[in-house]
Image (cartoon, rainbow, N blue to C red; front, side, top):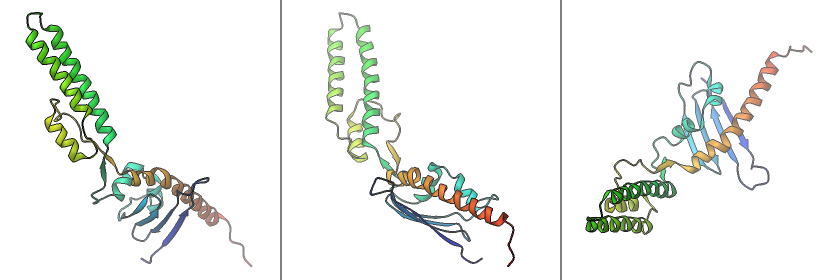
Length: 196
């Protein structure tokens, strides 16, 4: 099957000096490539389904697209410091609530135990305030010293922001261009031929 290369140029977002992308597609083999403000990516969809390659591209959602464009890349998921810090803060608040509940249950004759619990609450709060969450390695080092149970907490990695920005900003604009092109092709194909 001969190559059917098509090139799409997405201009800068109006009013900004950024937001461009150049997309090249070869429908003969499902090849997709882009160079953009949000990174450079490529993928080959060799079996896009029975509805056709163009329709397949128009139906792709941002998460599926991100997964394919970042396939095999080590930076597919990136650590999110803010997400880790917020999640640990809520876990810490819950832990402190449970410890304070224990304090209320202790009678006045268990003053030593009360002081120990109050100390552990303050120490854990200070430990959180001094924490370095700047990388997944520093987060892990901090979590091994914490009293909180981090085995229950999820991973603090999110989809690569650059690629996700491409999927959310450039891809919809590409799909608009593609829909317009396909509509024009369908209209031209439906028009009666004029003989000379």
